[in-house]
Amino acid sequence: MSDASVLRHTLIGASALLLWSTLAVTTVFAGGVPPFLMVGFAFFLAFLIGLAKWVIRGESILGHMRQPWQAWALGVCGLFGYHALVFYALQAAPPLEANLVNYLWPLCIVLFSGFLPGHRLRWFHLAGTLSGLIGVILLVTGGGSVSFKAEALPGYLAAFGAAITWGAYSVLSRLLKAVPTDSVAAFCLAGSLLAFVCHALFETGGWPQTPVQWGAVILLGLGPAGGAFFLWDLGMKRGDIQVLGALSYATPLMSTLLLILTGSGALSSMVAVACLMIVGGAALASKDMLFRNRKAAAAE
Image (cartoon, rainbow, N blue to C red):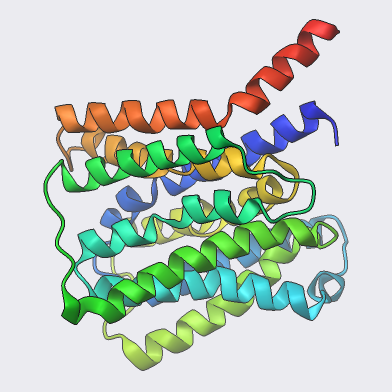
């Protein structure tokens, strides 16, 4: 694959990070819609995106559904399993600490990618990713202390499991390049059904009640909890997976900045320091790709 193609698909994957940065703001507007119900709707909308494409192009719906069992297992466990573990973690442990543990997933992507054929983990990949992790810790804690409580251990384990799950899903997708990205729609349909079942079993509360809530749920399906999965799949399969892992730490930063812009947060010196750590780490982790493309451009 050419350097230009790798760069293009890395940028496509990075656009998923932009969509994920809107998750917090969109969820605020969704109000009190139960999490599993919200995911069920969002995943179903993601399926409809794929379905619309298949119908418009006259493609076989069943043909897109016929994928290897390994692809189904990875897709459903990755997409639905990650969200189920995160929701449990946020309920069984203090949200701040659980969220910090969950944000080990970009580090997992970078570390796991070292085991992929043809990939090598370099010092600047790891250093850049660790810089991003420190930036996220500063961003979430505001520079204060974090206390992990023994009684919340199940929640912490679930958050760690979520990080491992998303890291593994992202990296293992690389080994399934032959599985088309359109298949994400089929996996989202299965995840949607599982989410609705979990809502019926574990949650109380009903459907969105206001136009704002419905609008937020639709935006979730089109963006951070639906459409972004297609973009991420392309990035993981054909982009620079280690750079995307490091860039992932920009998601909570962009999310915080959006909350500040919408009046749900305040700008502080700690946010500025976190910004420098995350952006600097992403630039360091991207060093190889950036200089490789500069050399290629100079040679032309």
